[in-house]
Image 1 (cartoon, rainbow, N blue to C red):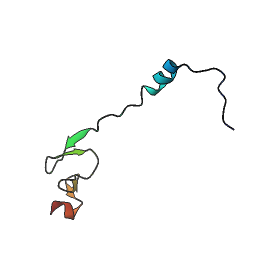
Image 2 (cartoon, helix red, strand yellow):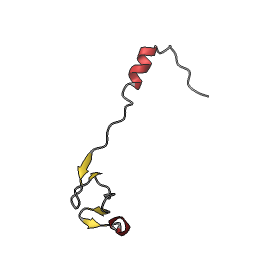
Image 3 (cartoon, rainbow, N blue to C red):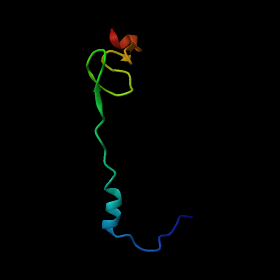
Image 4 (cartoon, helix red, strand yellow):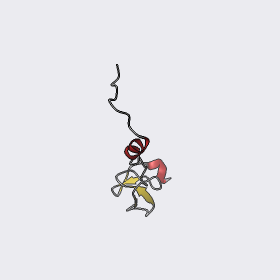
Length: 61
């Protein structure tokens, strides 16, 4: 059984609640090794390094 609402929620009240469901752009930082833009705390897709260490060898080739 689902919960039955006591009173009707108006369209404006419903839409105010949904107004905060927006996407935000990812924060991009420069790779410390190659300088390409990447997401922080992730392996760089351009050179395959993370924290100045090479993680993916096939990405560098």
